[in-house]
Length: 348
Image (cartoon, rainbow, N blue to C red; front, side, top):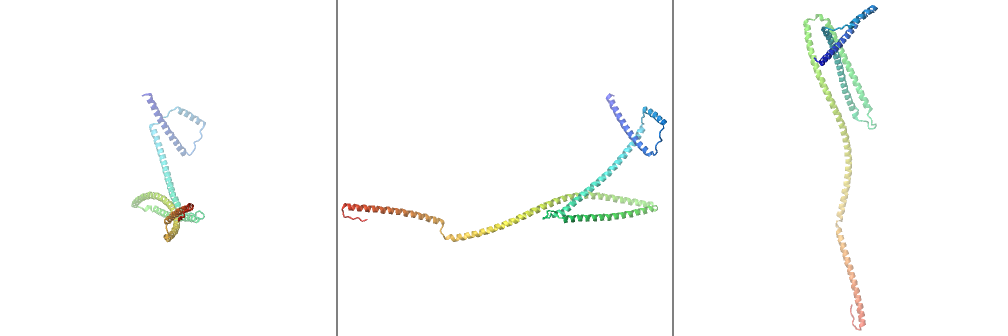
């Protein structure tokens, strides 16, 4: 065996010894607590001689090495196991109690959340859905007061109902206790057959109770599913309500736009009517004036007149020139006849 193996073995043995010492310390501490709790009287005060004897015995025990046998170790280990199992059972019971309490708190919280959501939905449906006052821009106080008055009356009715149910259950408990006391007093007269019959009835009632518990569990599961579905449907309903409000606003805007378009259409119809009347008047005037000459004919006649006037001016100029030439020729002829002495006369 190598040094490394020996070191590992020593470490393993020291670990075992440490665990045994810890178990022994726990066992001794618990036994000491038990002995102190059971010991009611105090020990008498020790004298000086007894103190010296105790100190000498402690000095001798200090140098002595005590080892436990295997049976003692098994006994201590069994005691510790029982103690640890008892502690674990207590812890498990505490944990189960805490778990039940937390489950009840969670269920109560979920129920309260559902109730708050229902109350919020009712408040929105009763008060907020009717809108604010257009003059004050605030919600109506009478609706709020009426809503809370209805809630208070509903709570009072629920309290009265629970009180009646509590009184009924109390009377039933008293009747059952009375019957139980009567059975206890008359228990000596019951035979084994009666006890056997009661045992059978107890078994049948236990089976019925288990069946009812299973049905109740199914109902709780289905109720949770229905509550979840109801929450989803309420959210969908709230969304649809908000969409309906938006649609109502858009419908109102469309109706206003329709009214404006109708007014514009009326105005346009009036304009069209007046325009048609004007067109009819123009058509009538055009029909009356259809016998008058056309503009093109007037322009052509003007052109022809201009050309004729131009030709007249040209002929007048030519006539003036011819007359001037004839006068000149006549004057020259006269001058020529007078100067030659001949008695000829020329006719112009």
